[in-house]
Length: 116
Image (cartoon, rainbow, N blue to C red):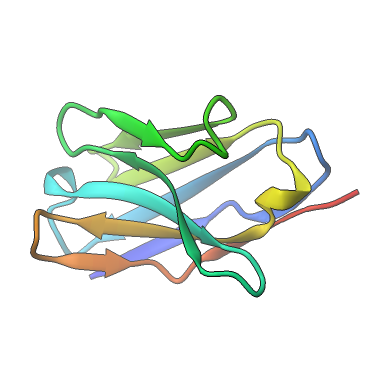
């Protein structure tokens, strides 16, 4: 089982990034997918989630209206489009897969730095 994130980097305030998370080793389309983040010196924070089949989405208040989560089940990939980035969005972003109360998987993370 693998979740591999990519797309992080350094961006100026107000800029955009798109994170990707490619899954392998499990039935991606059956899993509820989320993004979390962890800023330096802070705990891991939930950012956004998307359901397995209907693709319903939900967001933390801190990113609502700026971030968009989506998935492509044919490509086993979940995305996080991040617009209007702020310095407080600086964190390591993690992909998370869950199916009911059972299987749970984490990616290794990708660093996002928002700075001028």
